[in-house]
Length: 299
Image (cartoon, rainbow, N blue to C red):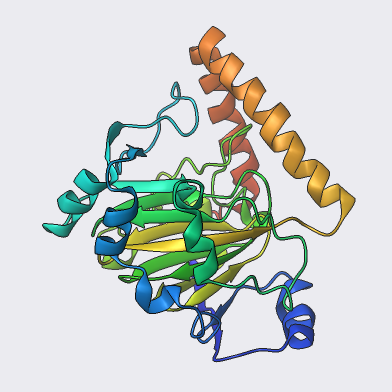
């Protein structure tokens, strides 16, 4: 993979953000966006536990979904309080995602402000909380609705890989899914992951990497692929904004209502042929990006 650092600023004006990051679809970390939010120091495990500790939540482990599993199928359920106690004890590869905590504790809405000066189209009914224990992994994917995301990290640190949507063939995207066939787990350790032997086109993939710390806000442009690993147990909040163009909105609706429905039906009715067709298409799409090694003959 060919990775570069994400740009980092302390603050940025709306005009600069639009010109240099929003319109050209470039990721950015803003250090001070959350500094004036009461949430930055108010939100912690004890506070959340007091508010919604008895609420049952869906949990997800680190195992990548297989060919026959519908998207977003939970691996376990616990109360939020039980989950907090579990991840506090040490490394725990369990996470919660797309959790609308604000539906159950609406007073939390008062603890942050929407940064409308940066971009329009925020879906203000659905701010989402993402939590994970140390060592938990969100595997490489792009968000199905193709929204722009402002992802603010609270407790803990998180390592993030990012790739533009256009890199999808080099990332071995599964047809009719938002997931990569390749496993990027612990890519930074140098243990041979990702597997360039099985996925050679990954060598040509151009992207970004960054470590988010307490208070950092990451702008992920619409369609960006992302892989996240929790260095520490922690949580983050995502604020989503719809694309300004009709085409962008329509493609997101198609993904949600058309693409996902087709994939779910095919996994139920013809799982093996469907999987085999996907594999053939994945490797065919990646083939143009595989650099052939020179062949040498003995003289």
